Structure formats: C-alpha cells, structure tokens
Image 1 (cartoon, rainbow, N blue to C red):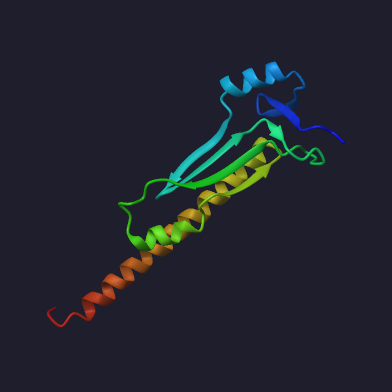
Image 2 (tube, rainbow, N blue to C red):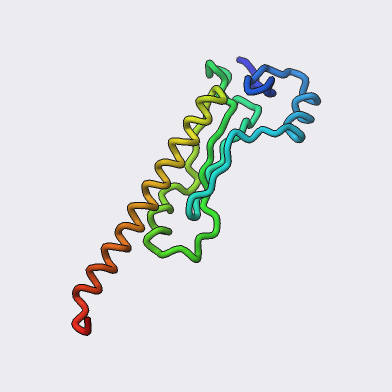
Length: 135
C-alpha cells in the first residue's frame, strides 16, 4: 500500500515531494491560495493542501475548496437560512484550473442562493405594503 502523498507546487502544477522537511517548509511559507471569496456570510476558500489522502487518486487531489459560514448576524434571517446549507461543504480537485473552476461554481451557487433570498424578502415587502390597510 502506498503512503499518503505529499506535494508542492511548481508554479501551478503539483509535483510529488518525498522530502518531508522540504514539504513542511513549503507548506508553511508558500502562497497556496487559488482563490478566496466572501459572499454574504459564506467564505469560499480554495487552496493547495499539499497532500493527497487517497493514493489511488489520479491525478492526486491536492487542492481543496471549502465553504464556511462567517459572521452574518447583520444579515436578514432569510439570507442566513439560505446560506446555512453551504456550511462546511467542500470538494477536492487535482489541478489548479479544476480547483479554480470548482471555486467559481461554488461562488455562483452561493450568489444564486443569496439573490433568491433577497428576492423573497423584496416580494414579501411588496406583499406586506399592498396588504397594509393604512396605505
């Protein structure tokens, strides 16, 4: 059985690195960020994690996109509820370009959910105002 594979980036290309000292130094000092985006209270982070936990992966899945909820108390409850589904969601990728694509897909999904929630809020406000007998 193969051991867990460790990788560093040569530009945007993952290359195997069996020297754990070199790998750990690289991991602590390299700019491994593919993209970082915040939409409402969702942080979408895509980085090279430098390790493939499944040695059967071809190509090695060394990039990870994670979605986490951050703050958001100032947002309407409808938006908070719409974004809750994205908490701790993630996906691994094998190439920088694939990782960027996954990141962009998640950004679009979150933006769509937030826009739908805001539309719902607007519709409710219109309905409330047309049903208000004092208007």
